[in-house]
Amino acid sequence: METKDKRTKIAAGVLALAGLLSLLTLSTAGNLEPNASPGPTMKTLNEIYDAVIGVSQREGYIGHFALPAKSNVVCFIVQAGKQFVLLNLTFRYDDSASRRKAYLTVNGNFLTGYPYLRSYTDPTNMIQSYADFPDRCVVVNAGETLKVVNDESSALKVMIVGYFHDVP
Image (cartoon, rainbow, N blue to C red; front, side, top):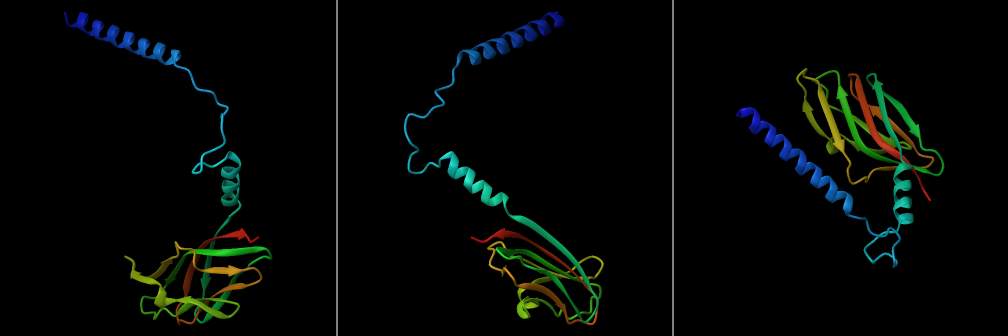
């Protein structure tokens, strides 16, 4: 008796699925050619394409730098016609006793430093400071030089995340 119930359930399921599929094949799509121009809140395909191309032309950047005590390193010089946008900055010190005196400069001018960063001690007791710039407020313009300066008496590791983009 149990086998008959299973067969009945399977047959009912197969028939329901077949009925659903046949119903779907009867439905038709509308005309793909619009009969009017886009409404005021709609975007044309050309506008969407232009917006996507603008985003895809960003060149992502992640730079890792190791600085000995009392040193500095040039990260990059921004090429003509481009701009660099800083998204994230992380300083990691090899000595938990550090006072965390490291900062970024653009053409030798102070850009950001410890007061603007959040610091914490990781499980290995190393000091880490980081800052997120989701508002994309820190930019380095064409021809400018981004440099990391380590004024501390211990080694420093730095990670810089951002992107380059064309400036019209």
